[in-house]
Image 1 (tube, one colour):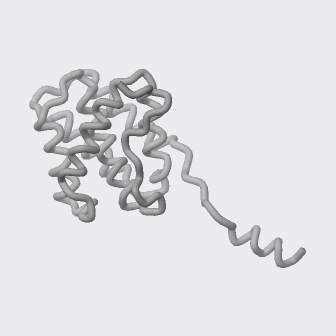
Image 2: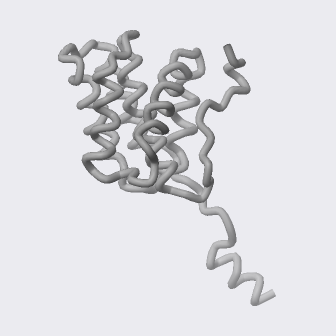
Image 3: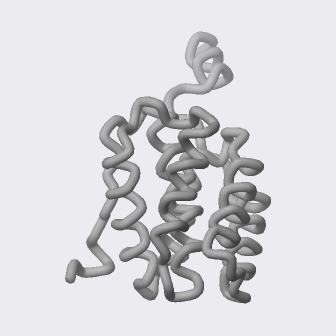
Length: 153
Protein backbone atom coordinates (compact mmCIF):
# COMPACT_ATOMS: atom_id res chain seq x y z
CA UNK A 1 0.00 0.00 0.00
CA UNK A 2 1.42 3.44 -0.88
CA UNK A 3 2.35 5.85 1.87
CA UNK A 4 -0.64 8.15 2.42
CA UNK A 5 1.60 11.16 2.96
CA UNK A 6 3.39 10.83 -0.36
CA UNK A 7 0.94 9.11 -2.69
CA UNK A 8 -0.72 11.06 -5.44
CA UNK A 9 -3.04 8.61 -7.18
CA UNK A 10 -4.24 11.00 -9.86
CA UNK A 11 -1.83 13.16 -11.75
CA UNK A 12 -3.16 15.93 -13.89
CA UNK A 13 -1.55 15.15 -17.22
CA UNK A 14 -1.91 18.74 -18.35
CA UNK A 15 -1.75 21.02 -15.30
CA UNK A 16 -3.08 23.98 -17.25
CA UNK A 17 -6.08 22.03 -18.48
CA UNK A 18 -9.11 23.14 -16.50
CA UNK A 19 -11.19 20.52 -18.30
CA UNK A 20 -8.98 17.78 -16.90
CA UNK A 21 -9.08 19.28 -13.42
CA UNK A 22 -12.85 19.69 -13.58
CA UNK A 23 -13.25 16.03 -14.56
CA UNK A 24 -11.07 14.99 -11.64
CA UNK A 25 -13.15 17.18 -9.30
CA UNK A 26 -16.35 15.52 -10.48
CA UNK A 27 -14.89 12.05 -10.09
CA UNK A 28 -13.65 12.74 -6.57
CA UNK A 29 -17.04 14.13 -5.54
CA UNK A 30 -18.72 10.95 -6.73
CA UNK A 31 -16.09 8.74 -5.13
CA UNK A 32 -16.40 10.58 -1.80
CA UNK A 33 -20.11 9.87 -1.62
CA UNK A 34 -19.65 6.29 -2.84
CA UNK A 35 -17.13 5.40 -0.12
CA UNK A 36 -19.04 7.17 2.65
CA UNK A 37 -21.12 4.10 3.49
CA UNK A 38 -18.05 1.80 3.20
CA UNK A 39 -19.63 -0.09 0.29
CA UNK A 40 -18.67 1.15 -3.14
CA UNK A 41 -21.22 -0.26 -5.51
CA UNK A 42 -20.52 -0.62 -9.23
CA UNK A 43 -23.76 1.29 -9.90
CA UNK A 44 -22.33 4.27 -8.01
CA UNK A 45 -19.21 4.27 -10.19
CA UNK A 46 -21.35 3.85 -13.30
CA UNK A 47 -23.50 6.80 -12.23
CA UNK A 48 -20.44 9.05 -12.00
CA UNK A 49 -19.41 8.16 -15.55
CA UNK A 50 -22.99 8.40 -16.86
CA UNK A 51 -23.37 11.85 -15.28
CA UNK A 52 -20.12 13.14 -16.76
CA UNK A 53 -20.92 11.71 -20.20
CA UNK A 54 -24.55 12.83 -20.15
CA UNK A 55 -23.52 16.43 -19.67
CA UNK A 56 -20.57 16.33 -22.02
CA UNK A 57 -18.28 17.49 -19.22
CA UNK A 58 -15.14 15.53 -20.14
CA UNK A 59 -15.38 14.37 -23.74
CA UNK A 60 -11.58 14.24 -24.04
CA UNK A 61 -11.20 11.60 -21.30
CA UNK A 62 -11.98 7.99 -22.13
CA UNK A 63 -14.31 5.86 -20.03
CA UNK A 64 -11.47 3.55 -18.99
CA UNK A 65 -9.50 6.50 -17.61
CA UNK A 66 -12.57 7.78 -15.75
CA UNK A 67 -13.18 4.33 -14.27
CA UNK A 68 -9.52 4.11 -13.19
CA UNK A 69 -9.67 7.59 -11.67
CA UNK A 70 -12.78 6.67 -9.72
CA UNK A 71 -11.26 3.42 -8.44
CA UNK A 72 -8.03 5.14 -7.41
CA UNK A 73 -9.88 7.90 -5.60
CA UNK A 74 -12.24 5.45 -3.90
CA UNK A 75 -9.20 3.64 -2.50
CA UNK A 76 -7.39 6.86 -1.59
CA UNK A 77 -10.44 8.31 0.18
CA UNK A 78 -10.36 5.50 2.70
CA UNK A 79 -7.10 6.93 4.10
CA UNK A 80 -7.16 9.15 7.22
CA UNK A 81 -6.22 12.29 5.24
CA UNK A 82 -9.11 11.97 2.78
CA UNK A 83 -10.30 15.52 3.48
CA UNK A 84 -6.97 16.94 2.28
CA UNK A 85 -7.26 14.90 -0.91
CA UNK A 86 -10.74 16.30 -1.57
CA UNK A 87 -9.74 19.89 -0.79
CA UNK A 88 -6.57 19.74 -2.88
CA UNK A 89 -8.54 18.33 -5.81
CA UNK A 90 -11.33 20.89 -5.64
CA UNK A 91 -9.17 23.98 -5.01
CA UNK A 92 -7.82 24.34 -8.60
CA UNK A 93 -11.36 24.47 -10.00
CA UNK A 94 -12.92 26.58 -7.27
CA UNK A 95 -13.40 29.48 -9.71
CA UNK A 96 -15.29 27.34 -12.22
CA UNK A 97 -19.10 27.09 -12.08
CA UNK A 98 -18.97 23.43 -11.02
CA UNK A 99 -20.80 23.63 -7.69
CA UNK A 100 -24.21 22.75 -9.14
CA UNK A 101 -22.75 19.80 -11.06
CA UNK A 102 -20.84 18.58 -7.99
CA UNK A 103 -23.98 18.70 -5.86
CA UNK A 104 -26.23 17.05 -8.41
CA UNK A 105 -23.66 14.32 -9.05
CA UNK A 106 -23.19 13.65 -5.34
CA UNK A 107 -26.94 13.29 -4.82
CA UNK A 108 -27.26 10.96 -7.80
CA UNK A 109 -24.43 8.76 -6.56
CA UNK A 110 -26.01 8.54 -3.11
CA UNK A 111 -29.29 7.40 -4.66
CA UNK A 112 -27.72 5.09 -7.26
CA UNK A 113 -27.73 1.98 -5.06
CA UNK A 114 -31.26 2.80 -3.81
CA UNK A 115 -30.03 3.12 -0.23
CA UNK A 116 -29.05 6.59 0.96
CA UNK A 117 -26.88 6.02 4.01
CA UNK A 118 -26.54 8.76 6.67
CA UNK A 119 -22.80 8.94 5.97
CA UNK A 120 -23.54 9.64 2.31
CA UNK A 121 -25.72 12.54 3.43
CA UNK A 122 -22.79 13.80 5.54
CA UNK A 123 -20.46 13.54 2.53
CA UNK A 124 -22.92 15.59 0.46
CA UNK A 125 -23.05 18.22 3.21
CA UNK A 126 -19.25 18.31 3.28
CA UNK A 127 -19.13 18.86 -0.47
CA UNK A 128 -21.75 21.61 -0.22
CA UNK A 129 -19.73 23.32 2.49
CA UNK A 130 -16.51 23.02 0.50
CA UNK A 131 -18.09 24.50 -2.61
CA UNK A 132 -19.18 27.49 -0.53
CA UNK A 133 -16.02 28.20 1.46
CA UNK A 134 -13.08 26.74 -0.43
CA UNK A 135 -10.48 29.42 -1.08
CA UNK A 136 -10.55 30.52 -4.67
CA UNK A 137 -7.72 29.53 -6.93
CA UNK A 138 -5.03 32.16 -7.08
CA UNK A 139 -4.02 33.67 -10.38
CA UNK A 140 -0.69 32.40 -11.60
CA UNK A 141 1.33 34.98 -13.45
CA UNK A 142 1.43 38.73 -13.32
CA UNK A 143 -1.72 40.61 -12.57
CA UNK A 144 -2.61 43.68 -14.63
CA UNK A 145 -1.88 45.96 -11.64
CA UNK A 146 1.59 44.50 -11.01
CA UNK A 147 2.50 44.89 -14.69
CA UNK A 148 1.34 48.52 -14.64
CA UNK A 149 3.33 49.26 -11.49
CA UNK A 150 6.50 47.86 -13.11
CA UNK A 151 6.03 50.15 -16.09
CA UNK A 152 5.75 53.18 -13.80
CA UNK A 153 8.94 52.31 -11.90
